[in-house]
Length: 247
Image 1 (cartoon, rainbow, N blue to C red):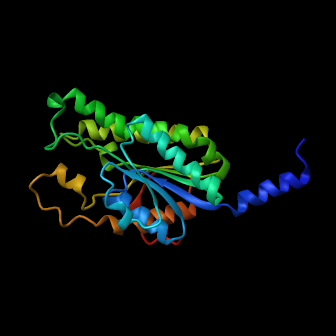
Image 2: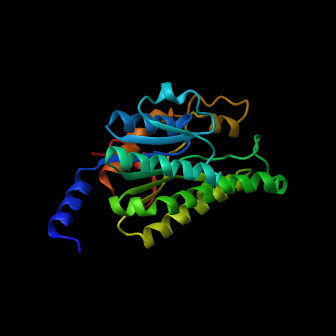
Image 3: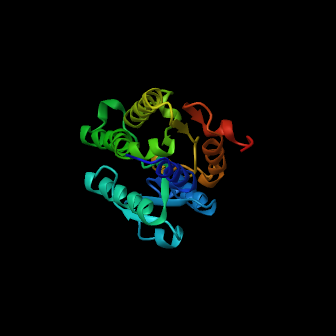
């Protein structure tokens, strides 16, 4: 039987545990900028990237697990890294950021021409991997009453020619987020549209075009940090709506 003192000790441990975040796709762009900001804010961060050789220098102090989120073995490696933080550092998983995304072929093809293998990989990366990671980490997120950030796009709600595979995958991610919020009311679950950014993926969507007028990913991060800190009701949100909002 668990004693009153044991329950009090467990409650105290939960309150004093250090916050940790898992941020996928932090090799570049928004994932890298957000992971760097969380580290600077005192979080412990586990992250991954398919190209991760530079991350030890780019994210000093982070736990970097190279790999692809569509690989079940890689997802298990991420889980082992997160559990390792909890075991050795007294951390709790407060935040899961499903940021890793696949755009599909570049230039973007019309639906009539989308290779099904490419569309399948877009869905594996943008929908099924976030679902798998959410399932994997739900026990830890529940224990921390944590937050899930699924990085979405305006292409999830607007019909842009040639964005069919990517946009429909993000629409599916939005719906998964909404259902998660309904099923797990103690969690905060957001599908976040960060807006257009000057990233490698956005450049691939517009090959040969000048995208220097787009915002740098670092400029979006303060809005995401405000969202995490203020925990408004779960749902689909635009980062622009949190720009300049009080934390």
